[in-house]
Structures are given as structure tokens and as C-alpha cells.
Length: 62
Image 1 (cartoon, rainbow, N blue to C red):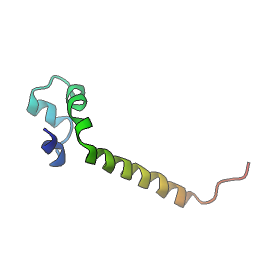
Image 2: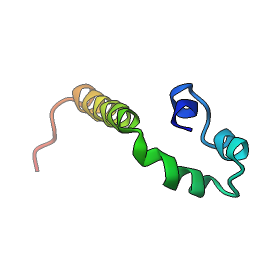
Image 3: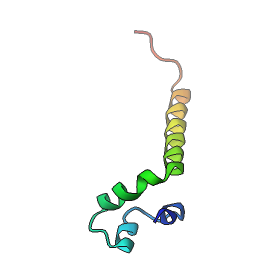
Image 4: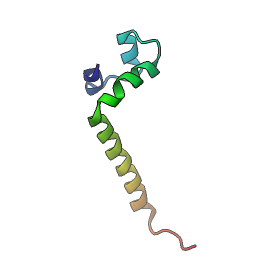
């Protein structure tokens, strides 16, 4: 199953392939076993936040 995520399969597609009744079942079982996805998500979030901070300019004085 982790290879499906690495291959770029959508979360909603994988449960159907595995016969899970809900996306929650698939997510609970498999997303925690993919640390590289967690690192990628953290890096993407950090880039988004840091990019917003850089483009926002200085913070207003209160």
C-alpha cells in the first residue's frame, strides 16, 4: 500500500483498491508508516509559511 502513495495515487482511490469501506480506515492504517510523506508535508508547510512572512514585509508596531 505505501507504494500507492509514493506512486502519487490519490487517497480516495487507494481505499477502493484495497476494499476499505472508508478513507479513514486507509489513512489510519497507512499514512503513519510513510515518514517521507510527513517530511515532505512539513517542508511544504514551512515553505508556505516562510514565503508568506517574506512577502508580507515588516510586522506592524502595536
